[in-house]
Length: 431
Image (cartoon, rainbow, N blue to C red; front, side):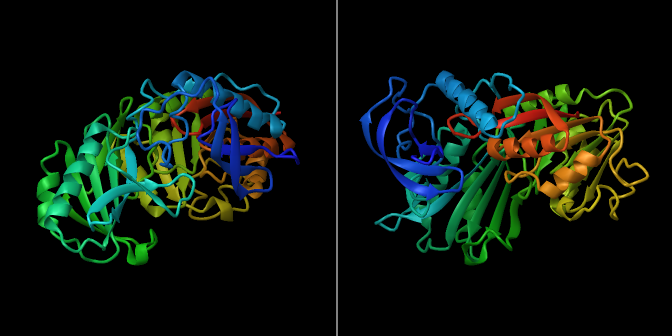
C-alpha cells in the first residue's frame, strides 16, 4: 500500500502478479483476496486438494512444502524486524515429517444442499459467512474422513428433519488411536441417536461420542451429553500420557508437540532442584513434560476445566511435584501475592517470582503490558515465551526489552503446514 503498511493476501504466492480486493483494513496492516492472477509466480504449484481454491482451511497448498518453510522463515524475520527485535532467530524447523494429515482436531459444519441433503462444509476463505462443501480434508486423518462419509450417508438415508444439526467436531489421539466425536445441535434433539451411535461404532478407535447442545447456534453456554463410551480420550507425547476432554486445549499437531516441547525443554535448561512456574498452563502438559528434574512445578490457568485436566494429567503420569491453581493472571497486581495462588507460587518476600524458570504460553492475543511489567520486576532465572502468533510475540518481546528483559534465542517451528500460522519459542533473560 502507498502508506507502507504490509498487505497479507490469502492464497497468494510470492512473486505472483495479482489484482486484489482489500477485505480487512487494520492499523498496521491490511488483508486481501486475489481477484485475478495476472502473472503466476514460478513457485506456484497445483494444490493437491480439490477444495483449496475456496476453502479457508489452508493457505499454502499452492506452494511446495520446502518453499513454505522458506517463505515462513522470511515472514517471521520481517515481523521481528518491524518490532525492532534485535536477536536473529534460528532457521524455522518443521514440527513433524508430515505436512498433510497431521491435525488431531477439526470442526465441520452441517449444511443442507438444494436437495435438502446434509453435506459437510468449511468456511469460504474470502467470505467466512459462506461455506464450501467438502467430502474430505487433507489436513485430517483418513479415519476422520471416513467418519464424514459414514455419518453423511446415514443421516441422508435415515433422518428427514435435519435443520437442528449444526457442527461436527472430531478429535484424535494420533499416538493412541483414540477418537472423540462431538455432534453439535441447535436444540436438545439428536434424531436417530441410537442409529448414529451404531454406525460410528463400526469405526475402529471410537472411544467417545458426545451430543452437545448449542442454544441459538452459539458456542457459549454449551450443554454436553455423553451418549457413548468414555468421557475422555488419551494422547501420548514422549513418555507422557495426557487426557483430552471435549473442553481441553491440546496442540493441533500431535507429532509437532514433541518437537515444540523438546525445544522448550532445551531453552529452559532445567537443573535438578529448579522451580518452574507455568503461566497459562492449560491442561498442564508443558509443566508435566518438564517436571522430571524440577523440584516443583506450579501452573496457573483461568479455566477451571483446564485445571481439572492438569491435575488429572499429573495423576495419570504419577507426577507428585506439580501443583495447578485456577487464577486470572490479568487481575494480578503482583504475581503470587493474591489468594488462593500465593501459597502455590515460588515467591520472594515481596510476592514476586524468585529464582525460578517461568514458562509463558498465552492465547493468540499475547500478554498485557501490566503482566509484562509484573514479570519483568520478578527475579526469575529464565523466561520461556511460547506463542502461536508471531505479531503479538514480537510486540511483547519489544515490551520486555523496554523493561530490560532481553530475548537471547528464538526458534520458529512450523506446527501448521499448509497454513500461514507459525509457532515460536523464545528464551528471555534479564539484561
